[in-house]
Amino acid sequence: MPLFSRERDDLRSWITEFDVIHVGGGNTANMYDVWRRQGVWDIFTDMFNDPANENLVFTGGSAGGICWFDGGTTDSYGPILQVLPEGLGFVPGSFSPHYDAEEWFRFCDRHQPHKRLPRADSHRRKRCSR
Image (cartoon, rainbow, N blue to C red; front, side):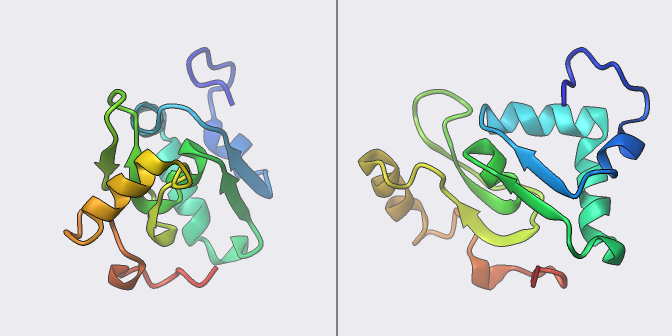
Protein backbone atom coordinates (compact mmCIF):
# COMPACT_ATOMS: atom_id res chain seq x y z
CA MET A 1 0.00 0.00 0.00
CA PRO A 2 1.91 3.05 -1.17
CA LEU A 3 1.36 5.99 1.16
CA PHE A 4 4.02 8.37 -0.17
CA SER A 5 2.39 8.62 -3.59
CA ARG A 6 -1.22 7.76 -2.93
CA GLU A 7 -3.54 6.97 -5.77
CA ARG A 8 -6.62 6.50 -3.56
CA ASP A 9 -8.61 9.12 -1.71
CA ASP A 10 -10.48 6.72 0.56
CA LEU A 11 -8.01 4.36 2.21
CA ARG A 12 -10.59 3.11 4.71
CA SER A 13 -12.96 1.55 2.17
CA TRP A 14 -10.03 -0.06 0.35
CA ILE A 15 -8.16 -1.41 3.41
CA THR A 16 -11.27 -2.78 5.10
CA GLU A 17 -11.94 -5.04 2.11
CA PHE A 18 -8.97 -7.26 3.00
CA ASP A 19 -9.07 -10.41 5.15
CA VAL A 20 -5.32 -10.42 5.77
CA ILE A 21 -3.21 -7.38 6.64
CA HIS A 22 0.50 -8.11 6.17
CA VAL A 23 3.08 -5.43 7.00
CA GLY A 24 6.68 -5.71 5.87
CA GLY A 25 9.83 -4.53 7.58
CA GLY A 26 11.47 -1.14 7.65
CA ASN A 27 11.75 1.75 10.05
CA THR A 28 9.06 1.16 12.67
CA ALA A 29 9.02 4.69 14.11
CA ASN A 30 8.68 6.30 10.67
CA MET A 31 5.99 3.78 9.72
CA TYR A 32 3.97 4.78 12.80
CA ASP A 33 4.26 8.47 11.91
CA VAL A 34 3.09 7.89 8.35
CA TRP A 35 0.24 5.64 9.49
CA ARG A 36 -0.98 8.28 11.94
CA ARG A 37 -0.84 11.10 9.39
CA GLN A 38 -2.55 9.02 6.71
CA GLY A 39 -5.22 7.58 9.05
CA VAL A 40 -4.02 3.98 8.75
CA TRP A 41 -3.41 3.67 12.52
CA ASP A 42 -7.08 4.44 13.21
CA ILE A 43 -8.28 2.21 10.38
CA PHE A 44 -6.34 -0.79 11.73
CA THR A 45 -7.55 -0.08 15.28
CA ASP A 46 -11.17 0.14 14.16
CA MET A 47 -10.83 -3.07 12.15
CA PHE A 48 -9.37 -4.92 15.13
CA ASN A 49 -12.08 -3.69 17.50
CA ASP A 50 -14.96 -4.51 15.14
CA PRO A 51 -16.54 -7.83 16.27
CA ALA A 52 -17.51 -8.53 12.66
CA ASN A 53 -13.80 -8.93 11.86
CA GLU A 54 -13.10 -11.87 14.15
CA ASN A 55 -11.48 -13.84 11.30
CA LEU A 56 -9.25 -10.98 10.16
CA VAL A 57 -5.52 -11.78 10.26
CA PHE A 58 -2.87 -9.20 11.14
CA THR A 59 0.66 -10.37 10.33
CA GLY A 60 4.12 -9.13 9.45
CA GLY A 61 7.82 -9.40 10.00
CA SER A 62 10.33 -7.13 11.71
CA ALA A 63 8.67 -3.68 11.86
CA GLY A 64 5.52 -5.37 10.59
CA GLY A 65 5.62 -7.69 13.59
CA ILE A 66 6.37 -5.08 16.24
CA CYS A 67 3.43 -2.90 15.21
CA TRP A 68 0.76 -5.35 16.44
CA PHE A 69 2.27 -5.50 19.97
CA ASP A 70 2.39 -2.97 22.83
CA GLY A 71 5.99 -2.22 21.84
CA GLY A 72 9.34 -3.78 21.19
CA THR A 73 12.96 -3.14 20.37
CA THR A 74 14.07 -1.17 17.34
CA ASP A 75 16.97 0.29 15.43
CA SER A 76 14.66 2.96 13.98
CA TYR A 77 16.75 5.76 15.49
CA GLY A 78 20.18 4.53 14.40
CA PRO A 79 22.51 1.60 15.01
CA ILE A 80 22.09 1.65 18.80
CA LEU A 81 19.11 -0.45 19.83
CA GLN A 82 16.32 1.30 21.70
CA VAL A 83 13.02 0.46 23.32
CA LEU A 84 9.99 1.44 21.28
CA PRO A 85 7.26 1.53 23.96
CA GLU A 86 4.39 1.93 21.54
CA GLY A 87 2.46 -0.17 19.12
CA LEU A 88 -1.14 -0.83 18.18
CA GLY A 89 -1.46 -3.10 21.21
CA PHE A 90 -3.42 -5.89 19.52
CA VAL A 91 -1.07 -8.45 21.09
CA PRO A 92 -0.01 -7.98 24.71
CA GLY A 93 3.65 -7.54 25.55
CA SER A 94 6.65 -6.69 23.44
CA PHE A 95 8.07 -8.12 20.25
CA SER A 96 11.77 -8.20 19.44
CA PRO A 97 11.96 -9.48 15.88
CA HIS A 98 15.73 -9.92 15.79
CA TYR A 99 16.07 -11.37 19.27
CA ASP A 100 18.17 -14.25 17.92
CA ALA A 101 21.09 -11.87 17.36
CA GLU A 102 23.43 -11.71 20.36
CA GLU A 103 23.32 -7.90 20.49
CA TRP A 104 19.51 -7.88 20.70
CA PHE A 105 19.55 -10.64 23.31
CA ARG A 106 21.79 -8.60 25.61
CA PHE A 107 19.75 -5.44 25.01
CA CYS A 108 16.45 -7.14 25.90
CA ASP A 109 17.93 -8.71 29.00
CA ARG A 110 19.10 -5.28 30.19
CA HIS A 111 15.75 -3.57 29.63
CA GLN A 112 13.14 -6.17 30.55
CA PRO A 113 13.95 -6.32 34.28
CA HIS A 114 13.52 -2.54 34.46
CA LYS A 115 10.08 -2.79 32.83
CA ARG A 116 11.07 -0.60 29.91
CA LEU A 117 9.73 -3.21 27.51
CA PRO A 118 6.00 -3.92 27.70
CA ARG A 119 5.18 -7.28 29.26
CA ALA A 120 2.23 -9.47 28.38
CA ASP A 121 1.08 -9.68 32.01
CA SER A 122 0.68 -5.91 32.18
CA HIS A 123 -1.68 -5.79 29.24
CA ARG A 124 -5.02 -4.15 29.93
CA ARG A 125 -6.93 -4.59 26.66
CA LYS A 126 -10.20 -6.48 26.80
CA ARG A 127 -9.92 -8.01 23.34
CA CYS A 128 -6.58 -9.74 23.26
CA SER A 129 -7.74 -13.33 22.92
CA ARG A 130 -7.61 -13.26 19.13
